[in-house]
Length: 330
Image 1 (spheres, one colour):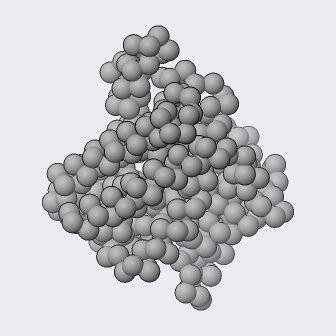
Image 2 (tube, rainbow, N blue to C red):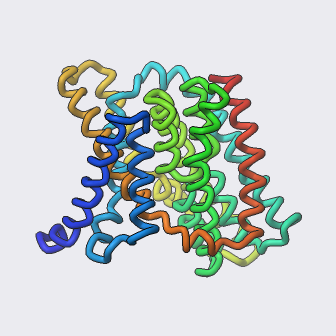
């Protein structure tokens, strides 16, 4: 990255840091979660005065800071807890992903009369990792730009709704921390809202929400290959390759796992781990400021009613099943 490109990013990065500082200060003096405050402040700015063009390049780096925060969060996660929950978590993730895929595909084709390609994009986004899955699967099903726009907008609608609704429902029902984290990680869509909702509930819930969501995200490569093979049989896709499995795995997951193992080994002194944890929290504050600034209500109003209905019905069913599974298994 050149000095010129860094200068271009600096104003937007400064904006994200300022929003993060404001959210942190608000969280220190009021009973408000700082991460949710960062999302809210960013969204208010984006939908009132708007984000100036000079700030957008830097503000759009929020996904990078989210990945940095997740990797550094590995220092806060107990390897023993991960190993203990591993089999149950893996089975729960695969089962819920399969349920969501089947339900959205069935509703799209048999009930709401959506096209195959749009239904598949909605199924991918709702079942694995939100907008990233929509974009990842689009090539496999040869979807056009209109399909991708509809699916992406629909997923963003529910990202915004669930980011607010899940913490509220969790507190209303008195859902235990780990159960809430697994529930959010199993049933919400995109990684940013899942992480934000988890930490809005509690520190432990945030860790489990992120861990569960990363497990889901790892299925993206297999999903791309699966859709490539399905659409290849109908002459609609060029087919997939095993390489797509690796390409679909988010690479920051490797860093997260490595830091979990390193922190649990005792090789890193406690003061150093404390500094890493602090850096993780700040990365999340900056990331969620950018996440909020990316929410534009005018775009969300463009989602069609039928895609919203399909995903809404599916989310209601999957959310109820996921909460039951999380309560029983965790």
